[in-house]
Length: 386
Length: 205
Ligand code: SF4
Ligand code: SF4
Image (cartoon, rainbow over all chains, first blue to last red; front, side, top):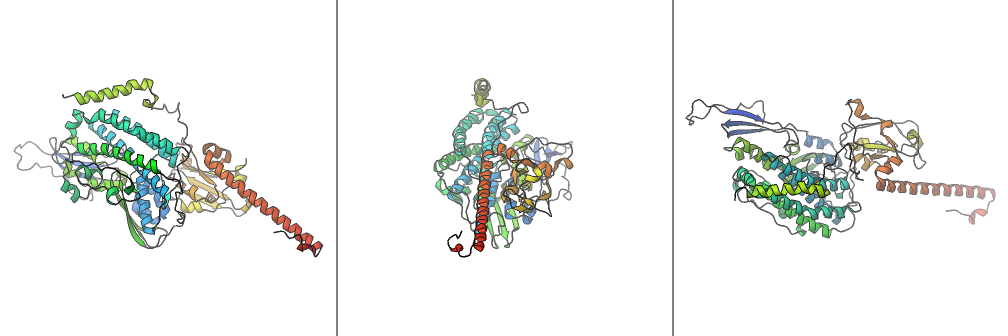
């Protein structure tokens, strides 16, 4: 979609409108500062307060990730995946590692699988905590809920820093395992954070879940029906909020997810409120998974001894590795021609595909609802634009 | 009752506000330049070159094998190899880099150079207050700016550095033992040539 060649929005009001002195107003929302929802613009045509047309414009953060990856070694692609969805670098690493492991038929040792689940679910916790905080911020609850959420998120980021060296650009996984083992005392520290997390969730629920303003703003707003969600290929919490029972942790059971018992929360109405509540409930289930994983984590090696990271050349072939990322189905499609670089490197970004229904969700809503609808989709522009 | 949910929420914020006077957990802000959090051991930001001893030019561990230059994903390392050789950490004569530049405005702190270096010569630093008003020259670090002592490395990453030092010590011990053995063998061989026939009894493995 080209911004330049597309005809401008037609500002003539529809014939059925009996007012003769009115015309549509075109508003360009964004591009915003990266600390909101990223550099993303919406060209909105408004009839009074009502949205009659919405055109998303993105690409401001395009970095040519997929093409760069074709010139990098398989190892060299790993740190670039951190920068896709920069909130959840570890799950990005995981999806890419999974794709390469499928491509080359690599086995991952037990302990590494557990470390992957632990760090992956911690990533989900911090992503969802950040998201519900930002959603409240979008609704006008400036500061307080976001800061409470960030306070918790920071504890998890500290854990990541102690393990991987970086808060957000973790570059943690390798094909055949993980880069480093948990340092002494890390698991105990993680256990503390996990045990304290439900307290934050209780607090957050008391703070907001029964809040009348929140309900008035979110219930019945930005509805996605079950059929729409399935037809648009939406995945993750967005799809589950519309009642689509699709969670790759249950469907694919990648890694060792068949060993944990957890429930998949489902929404009914597919509105912003359901999407918000679903994330709160998912955090509770993640805590359950984490408790089981922390209990069972074995000792042992963390890297497959037969896999070398440097000079890695998988045999020719193709593979698609996918995981249930915090935002939805994150997949990497790789084609290898036997050389040390991928021949083709393609990312299936959940943020971008979940964003495709934005106009359908916003039509007929008020202009102030656009922001919270966008917030409830949970996008990161690093992944949308790549 | 309408408004009940809002009141409940306000009670929660009040609990946090008053709680912040008694509970340290609720008061998480760190007043940054005055107060600082302790450094986490695994922290990394940009790479530096380790040298042993006191003279950075003599002690630089880097042998200029250029593996890191090749593996660095954004290609921000530039190395020129020397023509002559100098003894390295274990005493073997090795090349050294006459130029070693890292453009830290391009570096993405991925640590891959550290992972692939077979000589433990490049490690991750923790210094983060690096802002400069010269965005080209100021962020292109040369050999001298990159060189930091092994003591510094030991200070910022104690566990990791201790393991590296132990490995080096072992290697040096092995090299010494080998050298000693070689010397003994030489001596024995010399003795053999002086007194023919004695070689059968003083064979050295
Ligand atoms: S830092 Fe290490 S990998 Fe890079 S050139 Fe020097 S010895 Fe080789
Ligand atoms: S940390 Fe990564 S980007 Fe920076 S110099 Fe090393 S390999 Fe290159």
